[in-house]
Length: 132
Image 1 (cartoon, one colour):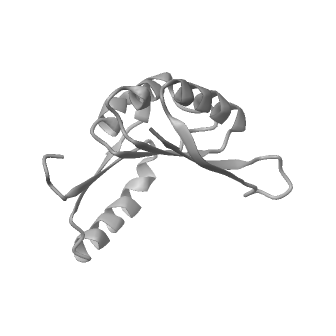
Image 2 (spheres, one colour):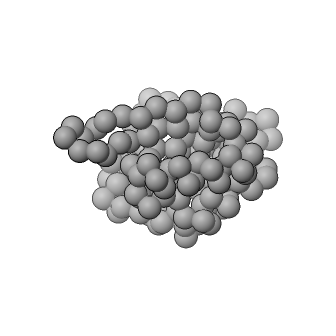
């Protein structure tokens, strides 16, 4: 924003154990001279959806099997909002429900692919890219 070329990455993660690898990656970015502001908040995305989504051009979500919380969906479909959304899903039923809501909210599926990550099970991981 404002003509600045500096990029910003905000991470909202519920698992506190993700903090140590995040800090290590943040140090590597700084050591590599990356011109990016990187911040992490340990919280559920539903606790701070506007903070996680507001002002972002691209958002990556990896919700639990039950899918995105309604507050997160509302933040993602707010206008103005991000122009790209990367959705990693481990629950096909909830992904289908969330996808329908995102499509109603002005998003379009740019690409989607499913992966069988756990042979011998009927579990499917879905990676979808939405744009608007």
